[in-house]
Length: 151
Ligand SMILES: [Zn+2]
Image (cartoon, rainbow, N blue to C red; front, side, top):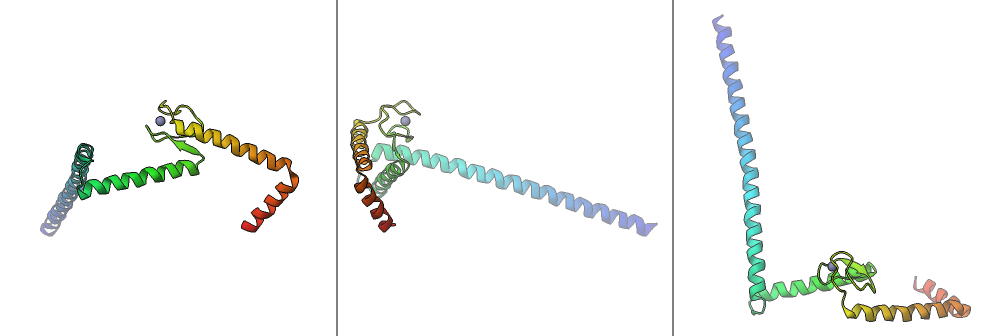
């Protein structure tokens, strides 16, 4: 009887240890989550501060400022190329890709620059050239052969 009651105590105390450890684990997991959330919050604040600082100092010759300006210009150029590859133009205000020749952005309503109207005119000229080629069957066949050579 004594043995069993001692065994019982041992099992109970071992069970309590496991429970405590599980609780500690839960606390650690919760704390780790809260630490990660706090780090994210701090990084957001750093980023917001950095953007504010940049917008107030973007004409300065500091290496970090110049580096950000250069990276932003590269990004802008890449986004324009992306819009072009998708067959559209990029809205300068919201960044949405809109169909070439659109007068206004379908997403934010901003007026699309006059440059794009010129591009639309250029496209009409291109379309006429293509039509003329289709009418002239010999020229069309020649183009087809050239395309195959390129491929
Ligand atoms: Zn827009």
